[in-house]
Length: 80
Image (cartoon, rainbow, N blue to C red; front, side, top):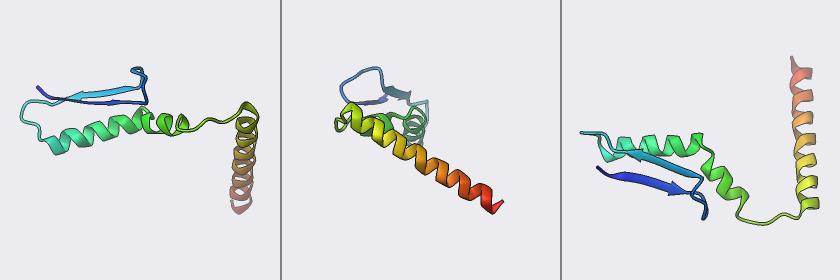
């Protein structure tokens, strides 16, 4: 039985694992694996840890994204 495994960064906690079923093709197993990786937000977590943000920068980025969401929400409400 073969296993497909992904590890987020160096941590073992962000582990996605599937096991090949009997008679299952590699393509369908890979499709299941990709879906599982997306559901567990492993890629998002890796991207978040690729560079360091100072706490002040992180705070500014967070408020900037909140303002952006607020503007989007307002424009949607105005259209409806």
